Length: 77
Image 1 (cartoon, one colour):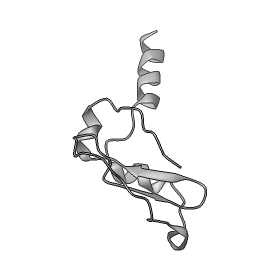
Image 2 (image 1 turned 45 degrees about the vertical axis):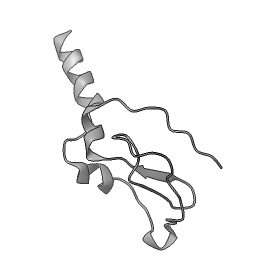
Image 3 (image 1 turned 180 degrees about the vertical axis):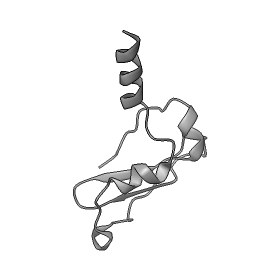
Image 4 (image 1 turned 135 degrees about the vertical axis):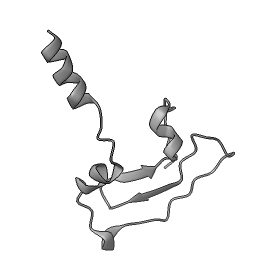
């Protein structure tokens, strides 16, 4: 039982190196669209920037969000 719990924890935890998270994403830099706006009062959980590649939208959060819970993100399209 302990082995299965340890294996589940290893797959559930993201890598501590943030570059490993980005390395797995295949994004064509020529297709990136940074024409997104982020509005609202300054808060510790306010996104830093948002951009899209035509099929996905990526939201960069502040580094402090690594150790805190995130609120729901609503997009006004």
